[in-house]
Amino acid sequence: MAIEMLYFAWVRERIGRDGEVVDPPGNVATVADLIGWLADGSTAHAAAFADRARLRAAVDQVFVPLDAALGSAREVAIFPPVTGG
Image 1: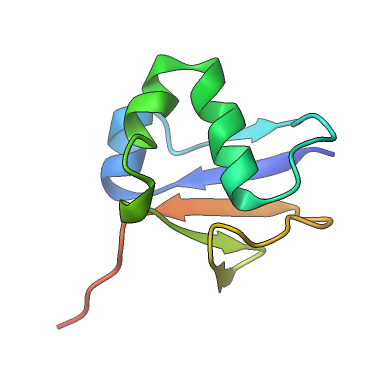
Image 2: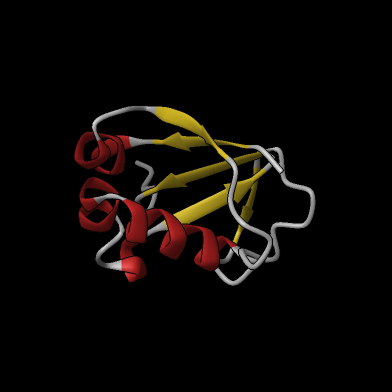
């Protein structure tokens, strides 16, 4: 299942790109699994995802916790906490 990944703010800066299309293996079932799989495959991803408590996610443009199931996700966005003002 191909998933379009989108990265924002310092996550994008640490990875070095604003997005990519990935095809994770079948055992990747949650956003946290996806983050772990990406971190295992690249030192840039590992650096960006090192402190998972500082990460937020959206699946198909809906905010979700990191333990959310991917299901048939077409897009996953990873970003730092959002503040307003």
